[in-house]
Amino acid sequence: MVLYFSATGNTRFLATELAKKLDDECIDLLDRIKKNDLSEICSERPFIICTPVYVCEMPRFLSKYLRNVKLSGSRKVYFIADSAGYGGITGYLAKKLFRRKKMEFMGYSEVVMPRNYFISHYPPQTNDEIKSRLIRACRQLCEIAETVKKSEKLRARYVFMFEKLITIPFNPVWSKYKMSAKEFFADSKCVSCGKCAKVCPLNNISITDSKPIWGNSCTHCMACIGNCPTGAIEYGTVTREKGRYNFKDYKHLISGNTASSGINNSSAVQSARRRKNG
Image (cartoon, rainbow, N blue to C red; front, side, top):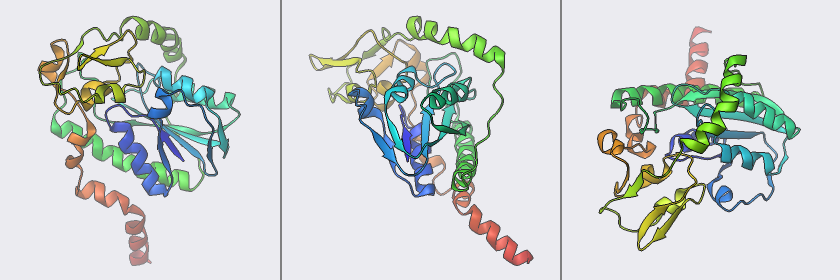
């Protein structure tokens, strides 16, 4: 069973595509997280957790949810983290979390996806850069699926001690003081649809006088601004210069692409080659 949280579509894409390749069930954890629904989740097949990376680790609210929810049935768990280029100690912390839950950690993979944190100092990515990342991610998904089918462990890079020493104390401080919602606002394009409130994992957005109002909790997941259907939400002046990101706006870059479509049939291609060479 594939479980995931996704803010702007990157992780949803990885999770749903992986579930298709494995012919497995896929569950979006957003509603459960918003409602603090800790009801048992049961799967007879290995659990596969897909998560974005925030400040070098999985979102803190997701980590809290996974610590507390009961996962029954299979005791095996795989972990997939998608980042903009650096997964930090995400896999290391996931390994600790699931071992405490008495589960067999089957390894993790880091998948580089297009950057959705467009309020950072990084310049906007070009369509070519986004396409390149998506094609590489598709190839990696096939490798991950084959590993899971064989019940083998996923392998990722080694996490060095200095990474742990820097990130573990740094993350809570950054999350508390730097992930502020004060710069978010909705302009005249807002149609009061309320979608921003529905996709906020922390229930930090309320609709008042037909306009969204942000509270004091924020994880900078970019779900509100990335999913606004009219592009009404801004973050200070940054987003006017850099725009925003949602996976659905770029999915066409890999639809029908020979590299990505060929990936899905890689096993068949290899079999055909073996028959030809045999």
